[in-house]
Structure formats: structure tokens, C-alpha cells
Length: 458
Image (tube, rainbow, N blue to C red; front, top):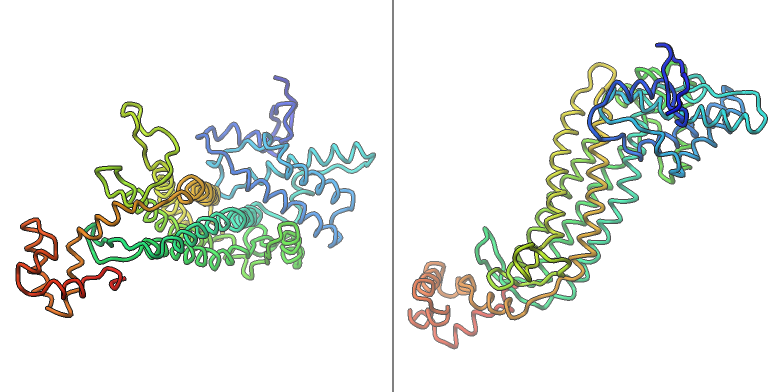
């Protein structure tokens, strides 16, 4: 491999000749050979949007020349095409402020932008700190990129995925609104409801979760940019934060604002905790939905078997013909990961010491993993399972009319204790409820047929 020599305040270091990064990126790459978890590319893209927004603001404020502004915008746009992903090699497990990822972006933009300036016959060249990082600190740029990446992930990926599954459940709820089935509480038989009503509960869960996520993500639209090192805004124009937030809003189509208190914005990540808490609530609902689906589809002969789901792949390497609820299994595994991520995010966010929280990379890594995993798994669950849910009418009818809990309909007529006598007799002697009722003499056949009507119990 061929190398070039780069310099920083520490000294000289060899950098692969074909890489756009500089000395500080290389030092981080060598000093933190920890794990395989890379800084999410979505954070890098958010940085690119931030850097070109900052360049435009600095030019408008008279601090950066037009040529340098154009060079930074050009390089940032090149990053956003995705063609330069290999030039951002740093891992999550680095400095807790994300300084080295900020410098990774600064160095790539500086080198690429300087090449562009040279190719266009310009004399100026970009410096990663003085120009690309002008009016900024890693301490305010990383949390800004964190918020931008997080908002885009939630609004452009997770919420549309939720809406898709919610629409499927709405359609199924309407389609199955007249199918009466037995309900269950404590995993035991309960009173009847319709399959449509049962599914409507799933729909309502998704609706409520989406609204909670939508409400909380608004707090993440406040950006730390302009706070620089400790929140005082040293080396930045007083209007820089607001101007740059407006530019970011224009590029992303989201309404970002400059955080009113930069001291809070640098040291606290309670907004992220709140949003991920709503994401965790969604995950909890998805665990319930996925479990309901696989329980209701269990069988095909020895389980509940009240619904059927698509058979997407063979379920066993040894048992021919077996089909498993694999989409439910994938979704529930994602939920367990999200639950773990929430614990990591909550703890990391509690570690803001004095003017800075230095757990930022692990916070955004876990946040984005949760959001993208959930979005992907919800879409897969919808397309490969939920849309194919169908009722098994024979099993539904059998379970409904074989349930002892239909006896609940007799409470107003013969009282709780007499109704319990009928249920216990039926269970002990293997009788139907009707047979047990007639045997006790508490009801006539005509009365039983009149009172115990599942259609009147829903």
C-alpha cells in the first residue's frame, strides 16, 4: 500500500494514499481498534448537511470566502451521494464527544474541496479546522448531527413503516368484524369478541405509539449548533446557530431550530431518551402483537389454530412440512434488542458531567439501530405475514362453542354462584354448558338458548 505523510498538532503520521481522510482520522483508526461497530453512515450524512449549512452561514456572516463556501458545499454534496462511504472508517468506540468523527468529516471535506478549488483554478485551499469547522466545535456539531440523523430516521423510515402495518390491521379489522371468536385473558378462556375487534386493538396500539413518537421527536428538532465548546458560543457569531439551523431545515425539509439553551444542548440528551422511550413503547406493543399472531396461528392441529399465516419457508431441517411463525420471531428478537438499547441510551444520557455528555456515539448508535431495525422488521412483518392473516373458521367455531366462559352471559339471570356451578359441572363431567345447565335444573332449554347467544356478548 502507498502512503502519504499528513501532519497535525501531534506530529506526522502515514495515511493511505488513496484515502481522503487526514491525520486525526488516521490516529483514531489506529488508537481505537475496538469492535466492528462503525459510526452510522446516517450520522456522517447529517454532518455533511451541517457542514455545508455552516459554510453558507459563515459566508453570509462575512467570515468565509465565496470560493471556500462553494468548495465545502461541493464536497459535502459528494458525501451525500454515498460514493465516499469508505472514507469514514471510524468506530463507535472512540472519544465520547465524537470529536474524531467530526474531524473525519472535516478532513475529507477539506481534502476533496481543496482538490475542487485547484481543478477550478482557485488559489485558496481548505483547512479542516479553520474553514470546515469554522464557528463550530465537536461538542455542538456532534449532538446536532445526532439530532438531525435521529429525526430523519424516525420521520422518514419508522413512522411510514408503522402507518403501513396500521393500515393492514385496519383493513383486517373491517374484513373480520363479524367473525365471533372466544376471547382469552390470563391465557384462559374468557368471553367472546370478534376477530375484527381483537385486531382493532393492534391497530390502536400502533396509532397510539405513532402519536407518542411524533410528539416526542419534536424535541429533537432543537439543535446544539452555535454552542461551540461549552455552550457559550465562543468563536461563533451570535446569529450563527439560528442561521445554520435554518439552512439545515431547508436541506432536510424538517423544521429545525437553534436550542434556546446551549448549555443544556451539549450536556443533556433527555430528548433522545424521551423519543427512544416512545420507540420502546412501540416495541412493547409489537412484542404483544407478534406473540398474539403466533399463538393464534399455533398448530396446525395441536395449537389454537384460529388464524392462518403465510408459509414463507420450510420451518425445520428435520421435520418435513413444518412451517414456523418466522416473521413473529424476527420481530420479537428486534424488540429484545430495542429493550437493551433503551437501557444503554438511558444510562449513557445520565452521564452528562459539567458542560458535556461524553457518551454521544453510543447514544446515537443504539438509537439509530433501534429505529432502523424496527422500521425494517415492521415492513417485513407486514408484507410477509400480516397481509396474509386469514381466519380458520372451523377452529374458531369449535373453540367458541366449546368454551365454558359463555356461562358469563347467565350471571344476570341466575347469579354468579349458580353460573359457576354450571361451568364446574360441565368441566368435571365433560358436558356442554347447555347439558350442564339442564342437568342442574337451573334453566330450561329455551331459556339457555335465549340467554347464551355469543352474538349478544360482543
